[in-house]
Image (cartoon, rainbow, N blue to C red; front, side, top):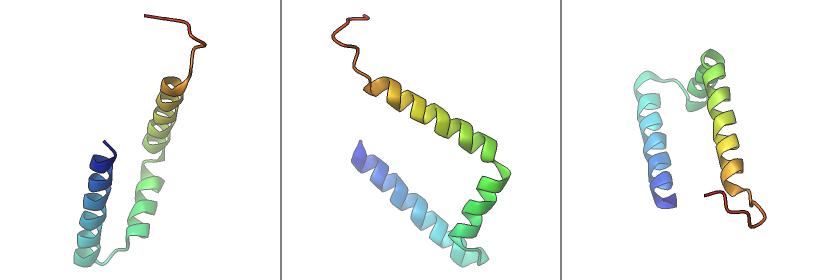
Amino acid sequence: MFGAVELLSLLVYLYGFIIQRKIGVSMLRMLSFVLDRGWRIVQSNLFLWIFYTVQNSLEHNGADFS
């Protein structure tokens, strides 16, 4: 699973590098544009991801909820 995430991040980085070469806009400027225009979506996805991760990592003191 971790290897797939690493591969995906490499592909995103390479795709961004190709876009940067073609249109001449830096990756940081593209990231700031996305965060400026779609901050609500990014914030809600980040909140849901953190909530899901915390809920899956909690121990329930031996209680069986199945």
